[in-house]
Image (cartoon, rainbow, N blue to C red):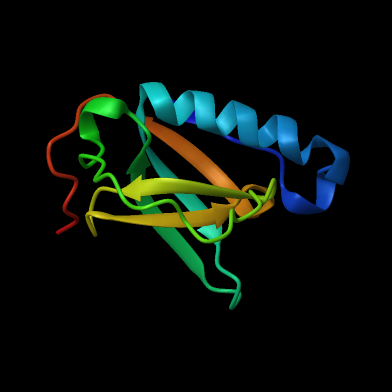
Length: 108
């Protein structure tokens, strides 16, 4: 399944929080190949998810000294190739293709 999202130049900036909610809901249920523009202008393709069974175990830490404000324009996700948390700006997404099965997602 290939799902194309609005290009940044056609996006109403007031829609960003609802776009983030939509992308987050999709990634909580699926693995996706997300293509987006990085801050340096280069294009990046990332296999990522927010599916609970594919996320690392959470380690309880001490209470942080200050609470970081969540950025409505950025979505943190689990990168399945790097096995690490990464994030992207929701308005930089060029495409999001849902992956039917998780099999390691290592590109040749």
